[in-house]
Length: 374
View 1 (tube, rainbow, N blue to C red):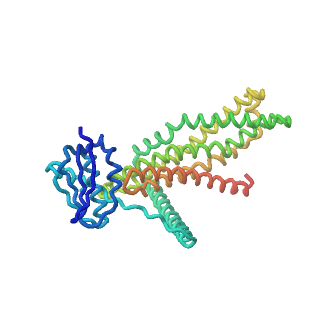
View 2 (view 1 turned 120 degrees about the vertical axis):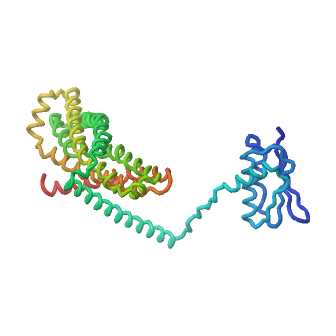
View 3 (view 1 turned 30 degrees about the vertical axis):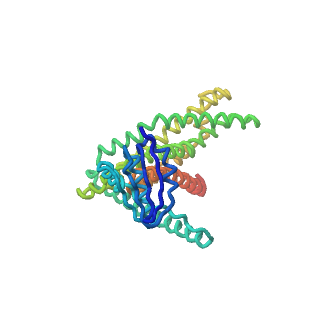
C-alpha cells in the first residue's frame, strides 16, 4: 500500500492541490493534519486526483469535506483526474454530508441574561399551562370511562397493573423493610441516651405509616414506572404511531394514558400498604434484636399508641401521588420531538419532575393535616 500524500502548488491560474497514494481509511492519519492545514482559499482551486491509486469512503469524505470548506469560503473548486469509480464515490459522499449548522453562543451581558431569564420564565409558564390542560383532558377521559365503563381497555389496564404494581412488589417490600430497620437502629441509638428505648415503636410506626412508606413508594414508582411510561409512549411518538392512531380515529389519551394512570391509581395505595407492613416488620425485627422489644410488646404498643388515622393519612396521599406521576410521565412522552435523544431527555425530565411534585404535594398534605390536627 502506498502512503497517501498531499501537496499544494501555487501557479498563475490559482492553487493546485495534488493528492497521491492510497487514500484509504487505515492510512488517513498520515494526511489528516495536511487536510486540516489547508487554509481558506479564494479563487480557482484544482484538486488533482490523477495519482490516487485507491480510494474508499474515508478518503472520499476527506476530499468532500475539503471541497465543502473551500467552497464555503468563496473558492471555485474543480476536481480533476479522478477515476470514474472514485468520482462517483466522492459525489455520493458529498451529497450525503449533513448540512451542520453550528450553534452560536448566546451573547453575554446583563441585558441578554435578563432576556434569557424572561424566555425561560415564559417557557416554564407555557409548560405549566400545557400540563394543566393535559391534566384536565386526562381527568375528563377518566370521568367518561367511569360513566361509560365499556370504553375501558381492560387488557391494557391489567397489563399496566402487572407492570407498574405486581412486578414492583419485591423492590417496594425490600425498601420498606430496610427503612424500618434503619429507623429502628437509628432511633434506638438516640433514645438509649434518655432511657426511652420503648418509644422506638411509636417512632417507627408514625414515621412509616404517616410519611415514609407511601412517599418512598411513590418515588420508586416515579423512577420505575413513570420512566417506563415516558419511554414507551415517547418511542411511539417518534415512530409516528400516535399520529397513526389519530388517523384511525382512536384517542391516544383514552388508549394510552387512561390505562396507565388508572393502573397507578389502583396499585400505588396497595404498594404503599405493602411498604408500610414491610417497614413495620423490619422495625419490629430490629427492635427485638437491638433493644430486646419482643414482637408481642411491639404489637401491643403499636395498637395502644398508634391511631388508625396514621395509616389513613399516608394512604389518602397515594392516589394524588399516582395521578401526578402518571400525568407528568405521559405529558412528557407527548412532548417528544423527532429523535431517540429526545426520548431520553424527556424520560429524565419526567422522573425529576415527578419526584419533585410528589415531595411538594407531600409537604402540602403535611401542612393541611397539621392544620386539621390529624
